[in-house]
Amino acid sequence: MRLTSTLATGVALATLLLGGCSTSNPGTADSTTTAPARATSSVAAVANPLDVAKIQKDPCGALSAAQLAPFMGEIRNATPDLTNGDFTCNWDPSDVNKLSVSVNVYPTIGGPAGVYSAKTGYNYFEKIDSISGYPAVHAATGTNAPRNGLCRTIVAVSDKAAFDVFAQNSTSSDPHYATMCTVTDQLVQQVITNLTTQH
Image (cartoon, rainbow, N blue to C red; front, side):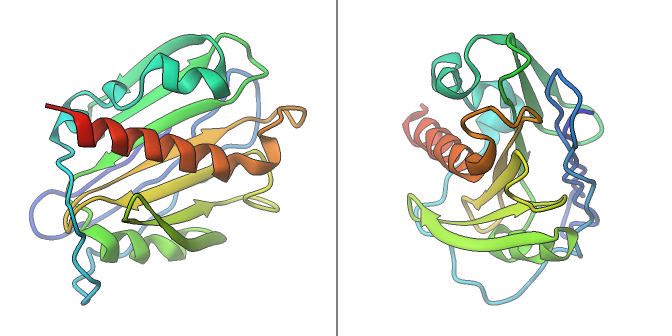
């Protein structure tokens, strides 16, 4: 099952679906979650906001094959999903024992407040140190999350927008299986670097 997200347009965020991304081999997918309406709390403004328009239009351009290779090896395919309000790319590895990765872009989630409001949708949700100065969280569902081969790092990059990186592998022998949040953190850092240097 591909990872999907549904974002409301305009002032209110009606629903945020953070579903599962599966590897080429069978495994447990991150379950669908629903976030409350877009928050309007006094969470501090995001310094040095980033424009997500480029990866909103081309989510598969958020990460390069070279940036993904240390975790996935050779990429079998990169599949964008720009339908029904989704701004998603799913990367699958050629080696079914490697992890798969997705990026989702949320242009109107409401910045940090919107990200934090998604907490009720996960049995594991933790605020972490900012990544390159941008507020971030780890989120996952499932037994013993996040130490079950999956993790999502969500980062607010402006007062309106956020994106996440989701990684998953059902192969417990994968060296990243128990530290998947480290993988997603590193890939979030790469996306931020790409956004910072884009022209």
